[in-house]
Image (tube, rainbow, N blue to C red):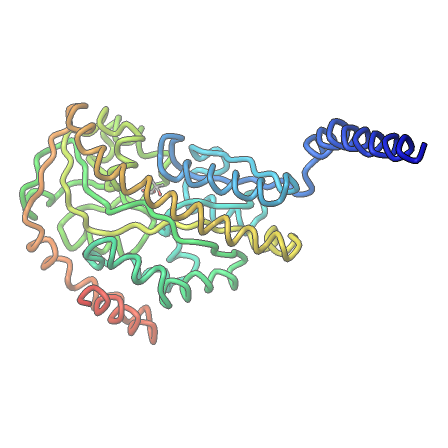
Length: 338
Ligand code: PAF
């Protein structure tokens, strides 16, 4: 009898376990998220940013058991370009930004540190700075601007494209009308090379190239390929004139509204997503040169020394603007020699 009661009890436990499994699990999965956030970026779904954004979404949603939901909006759906998306973070129309630091100097001038021409030698140099003290310090400056910088991703080394001619040297770029980001160091660099720099939101660039209102633009290989610029640009010059860092940034108001454990999850997920995005971007930078050639682009690699020489005065021009932080520029240069 005793034996029988024990058996009934075990049966009850098994039944309860079944009820819990088949009733509660769907209930948890269907539960509405407690936080719903909008992530925006400016480029195509084939670009490395999008892979990074999806990885961030996946990690956050998994680690919060669905309590936080993130919708990803590619292709400038939440703004006309990166400056607009960053303003959206401050205005509350965008919660999370994945994108370059290009327009950031307009929000916090010390971001201009990364915009100097031919500053970074290679990616080892880049990440010794971004993942080190300087990079973490610069990211932390965003707090005072209503944003929380979570991690460094990448856009890649920027290269010149144009529809007019093959570029073999500095004299060939003279007189070209080139779209730049809204960034005064970049613009000064192009002016020094005899180019007419035309800042423009990214959403307008393809049409401007197609209509011939500008002759060219400059961007990393993954952007050039995934934005199909080969349809409107014949010449690609591997100038690698600026390394373009990218970031995951959260609107401070949205970040502060999360419980502390979720803020920690955001930080961890951002690191994971950033490492993943860097590897995707790096692979694209190597692989897509051949794809661009196959799509009709003529690719040249001129001697970059004369370009570097012509851009030297940009350093003196903007040191003053950085004030005391100009010493960080020297530290970045020194890190490249280690
Ligand atoms: O040129 C730009 O505006 C940026 O490099 C882009 C394409 C939006 C990616 O960050």
